[in-house]
Amino acid sequence: MPDKRPIRDDLQATLDARRDLGPEYETALVDSFVDRLDATIAARVQAELGHPGAPPRKKQTPGGAMIPIALGSLGIGVPLTGIAASAAGLVGLLIAWMGIVLVNVAAAMAVMRRP
Image 1 (tube, rainbow, N blue to C red):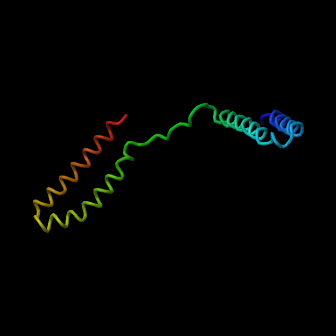
Image 2 (cartoon, rainbow, N blue to C red):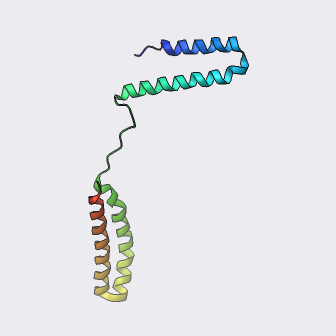
């Protein structure tokens, strides 16, 4: 476990300075101590994680972007099937579903091209 002595020493120094300087400097002293404490905590967290810098981004699966498109296609496809079949028969039904399939294929191709 890391040595907590520097933090205790900083706190003691801050309290001593407050006693010497009076309450009018209390806000500045507290802010200064909090900044040092934040820096110490950040350094400890980075040391625990073992890699400084920004946290790693979660990898997205390429198929994950297709889920809303697939669900939207199903949601639109059900009523469109009924409307197309009743209004234009089998030809209307085929045209409606070919349009849905083309939209899904184009979306899948766009997702696969992303780096």
